[in-house]
Image 1 (cartoon, rainbow, N blue to C red):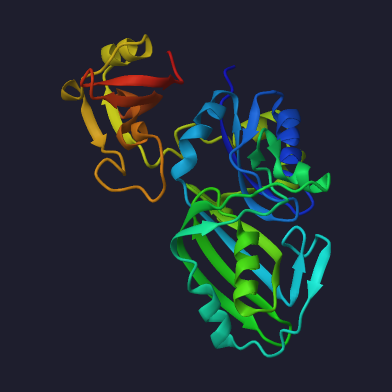
Image 2 (image 1 turned 90 degrees about the horizontal axis):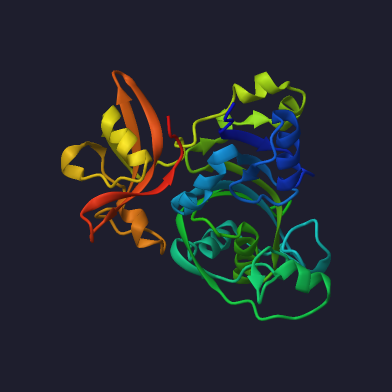
Length: 319
């Protein structure tokens, strides 16, 4: 059996993203498993896990927005920018007002420049930042451009000095860094004290499967939860092929858009994307073989201005 697909997992606290991958390998009986984006060990929520050839779609998900609900604690700073690190400073936050808090969040909208935490997996000269930090070595951390689509403050508890807020942002955004920067804007410091990822692209927390439930399933039960590999490819266009065209495409043939049915154009074919991305993604299409009412996902093709045709980037199904 060619096992392939994606399971939307609800990652529990105290688990690393790799812990979840290891469990899925054991439960599904397959080694080729990978997640689409790391969650910090103390964070919970949506963690899509790709299985088999579906791992090949992970590079296509750069355009996906992610939504988080975050709790932050005022008056503290730490080396990891969260409550679980070593506390490096304490300050009196008793004079901070609700109006000041809301104003401190205002700069965090649209395209912003952000300095990642020193305890993160970003690589500098081939080495991860957290490896430098653990070794007590200093390294320059360059700011990165990220995009904040929406940010809202949901609850302010002035007595406990806690703030609950939600953000929808581009890949690569560090929520801990926003907590740090808001704390600096307020002049009292702040750390992240809780984090839930409620959505990642097409995946939502409401549809996520609890990890404890998954680890106790047999292979058949777990495999029944697999979503098709094209499920998250919502930003790409859609092309329908007949059986002859499908066979030609799967064997390396180039497809003329004039000869097929275009079901949907790519989301960013005309519209400017919110982040920098490969130009090919603006003219990327999911290709399907149509048999009556049934559609079978074949792969992803990019439109080539040189050939004026759709050229396969990755083929997932060969019949």
